[in-house]
Image 1 (cartoon, rainbow, N blue to C red):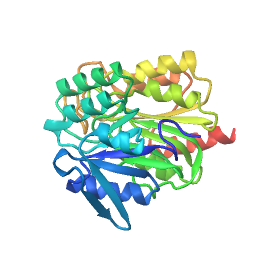
Image 2 (cartoon, rainbow, N blue to C red):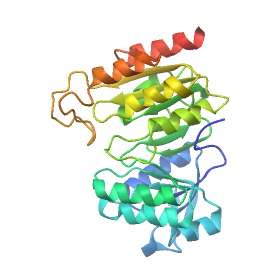
Image 3 (cartoon, rainbow, N blue to C red):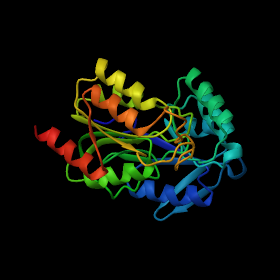
Image 4 (cartoon, rainbow, N blue to C red):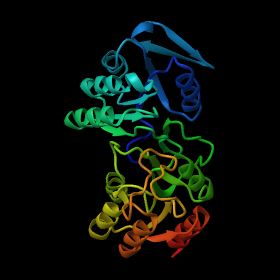
Length: 293
């Protein structure tokens, strides 16, 4: 099994006809994802040739869903239009919106996440790499050739790059699903959401949690793990050497005073029984040891 995305998922791509959308749609198709259409109001009724596939373009998410039964959308729309794109998808009743776009204003992210939540749409992101269930489907920009076989590990990460590295380190063991939730200050899906889903997935035996400096998401995840997660969890926190007051990589990765430090997050996770690695490679070894043990 997998969480959020599986072989049956039917995917629309909002912004498919742009350069980034086109490039990553090709990659998703090559990974076996069921791409059933793109969305562009100005190009409705046309079709796009992508290698050996012809993908129709719809004028709206609702038109695409009605024609294909799509239940997932991947958003490559530029920042000024991303809010409207997610709101449109939620109003159409899509189940999952994967928002790849970087640089979306915080107030737009707050607005479209609240709107989507009220309509029962799960949002991944913004500014995230997406979600991949190896051997099943890939929605986003995660390179599918890092780990090609399904496995027993569930991965949730703020960082796209660290998602890729841990997938590479643990490629021999494999993943049920790897989820990049994004590192912006406001995201639609949290560590806790993913932890809960992995806990309920019978094919996930161990969870890897990747966090970073800034905010208190990891501390809240630690409290949830202590109370509700029975499966082993291994963690890694990026940013031990980050200087105070400076944004590091993500808009949400900033330490103010004693709040959001890597050491505080590590301490909270270890108190909840999570083995925290000092490096991604050590984290991978801890995960393998826990699975063997």
